[in-house]
Image 1 (cartoon, rainbow, N blue to C red):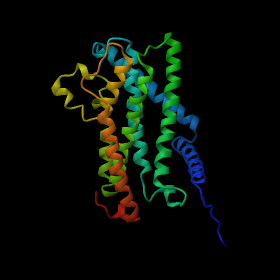
Image 2: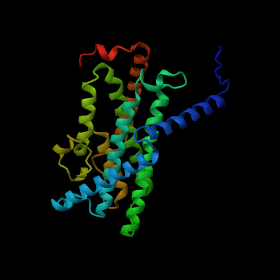
Image 3: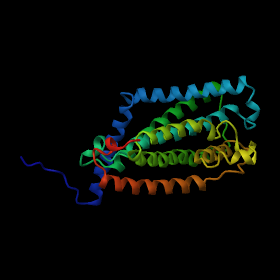
Image 4: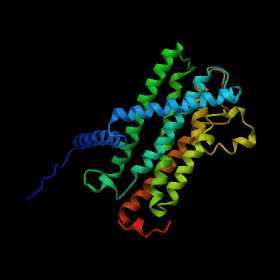
Length: 276
């Protein structure tokens, strides 16, 4: 029996087909982790609230609130926690999406780019919706939240997400070469971000020797720059947004070249032959 396939002969038709596939892939990715999108949103909100409560109690009980930026302490916590969660989840989503021989990528209409975009966009959608609901509830309960430059927070938030994608892609394409070692390194990186992201201590309050342990991390730059837009009296002196941008672009380009090579040369038995 002859199987007919739809061929798009125009750029507009190909674009519409890609957008349709992307939409269905995003819905599938959003439902895959928790069964449905509503439950996934609830879990995302619960994780954010739990981390907010833990750090609020930690700073209060240990007397660490003096290390925070002078101003609204809740805003200080939110700018760190939101970007931290967005970055780490982007790392995990992008790493899981890069699989030249896995899942739906074995089917003709699906490619690696579509898989990556579906995974990271579904995660971003849940994060933005969850954060918006949390901000709304906090705004109602506290009688308002004050951000010095709300529009300026968008770019650091986007770069926290984009740099997470870039790092996740690199971990993902390197995994076939060491399928046990690389996931362990990725997990250690996400755990290390609890400290190296700088969400607990602003860069301006660090000594020069301390900054050298933090400024390699693109998330550290994004969080510090976000706080510069959140607080009227905080001016970042040790961070910038150029570093996350250039690092993310470089990692994505290298990751895509490695992925292209893997897709052409990798076999199903690759992982079985690896000793790591």
